[in-house]
Picture 1: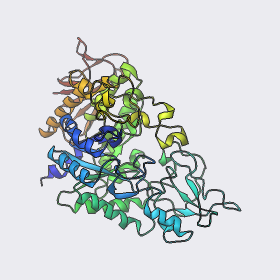
Picture 2: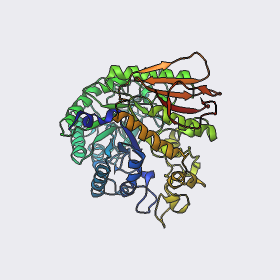
Picture 3: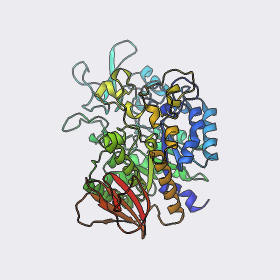
Picture 4: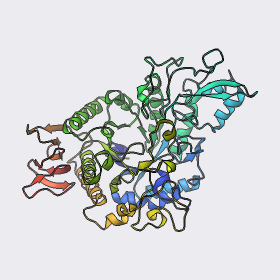
Length: 532
């Protein structure tokens, strides 16, 4: 194996698949592994080097797969292990590497080990695998500490003991159906070592680690001081529940395991921390990648983007790994809507895509981002997100099934005909965003994405660009909202974030997210790549 093959992840474009919403092969209204396998050529033709498939393991689906009851099996909703093996073969036949999700911070309440803990009772070895504690107050009716759940409400649920009496409480940083593992118990690490080996031996090329900054909690589970609720989806607001020093030993352990394979496997972390803390997870003997989340909340502003990009790039150098850029995923509002909606939001989403693909490092694209899908306002009665009832935050709007065909049959080609209704309703006119519609339009987001990935790949193969190119910011002092970054000796990225067209620097125009003006200027909300 060459060094380039081993280091493929350093500048890869990875396409995230949310299984429920990618493609439904059996007509039950929910996407599945067979649907992914049948539609995987779309990802290969897009130009991605790998796919990340969100959880499909056995689960009661309280949090759509992030509540795992068996880490080494496929939930029947999505297929079985034979179907998974077929997906692995198909991905590799298409030249795609496959990354799957691992959820080590918590499991499902239905997991056999948690069920055994419930049955065993207070003080048992079975309960020591999780975080059980006696409540406070004279009758134990007050939770053991003041921590809040990321999904809203308290992070503790009280159980009924075998005799029916109110008993201990257990910790769940997310939904009550998702009890947290106790990583201080000596049995937890070996248990997950076997899970990691299972999927690596099955042929996967990498694991994406959910809540990678979680796992360990402060010893003794003390109160958060000052007390206060954790904002929805913001675990890092509770430093007692995440980013503990002991977690790095887990990733050193898994990195050694990943490197032991003839084709080394990859570890990707969901590390939602400030860049300086996140970079510590990608030291040479830990995770290969950690998502750079800062652009998910950044305003459309030149100073903000330059400041964020500079910090991420600087911390990436210190952490030892290239930046892993992302502007969309399954937990946040779609970028066309986040950037203002309508035509302007769509233009900004196109420009943002070109911007992150033009920066050094790797990039993750979320399914439908290549189609410019907007956020869908799912009716409250149709929402499925467990966070909705607890915090008023719903992630359903970015999880609506992908439209494959222009006509509305089978939820625009998501399901065969006839089929049950899709698990989330597809809005009227959704087919206008479909793959079929955009393949026929040379100016579509799909065609822009394909072109960008092709140019990016060529420039990397020609060594014009590398994953570690230094970036020099070009500041002309015009104050017109232009963000310009030079990579290496000849490549320039320009982003117009103001309200007036901006001057393009010297160079041959390789690609732009929209038409340039007759005077050769870049219009507002447009990005361009140039080569000198």
